[in-house]
Image (cartoon, rainbow, N blue to C red):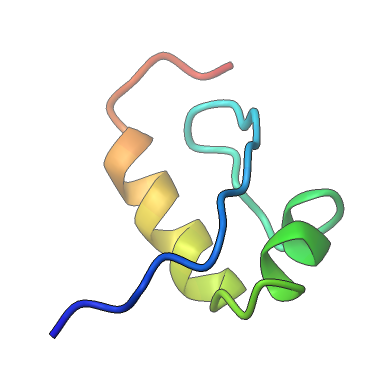
Length: 52
């Protein structure tokens, strides 16, 4: 069963450049998101796009 949406986080992250340092890490961490899992998934999904 899917989890209930608790809130939304708006971030502008360049393609393939997600890392756990601020501002991404703290924004995701305070919502209970697995930061490293997000960064790996985001970078994998945007890896073929133009950087920046």
